[in-house]
Image (cartoon, rainbow, N blue to C red; front, side):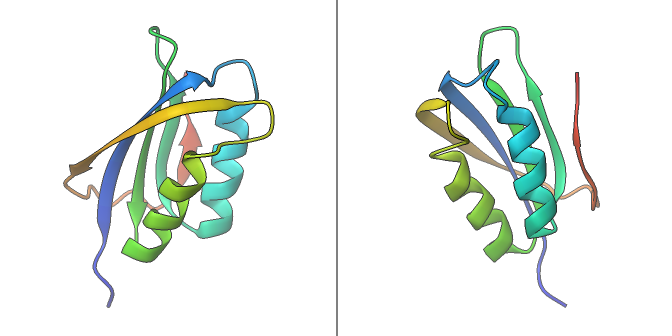
Length: 92
């Protein structure tokens, strides 16, 4: 079985009010990874993603651009311990 990793990404830029969470959830579902996405009060978007390393890397790569209408200035990524999350959701 492949290793499972988990990463936390903080996405900075014009990333709220542009469909970022909805699009991230769709991309995560397409890649079959678990985790969540949510807006933070400081205007960033937080994403935690868990799954096979290659699929996690693809979602992190997608976050660098985000959906049409978003402007991503930077993405800060940190490692987390996997928690066994296989579904992806939007949190509020």
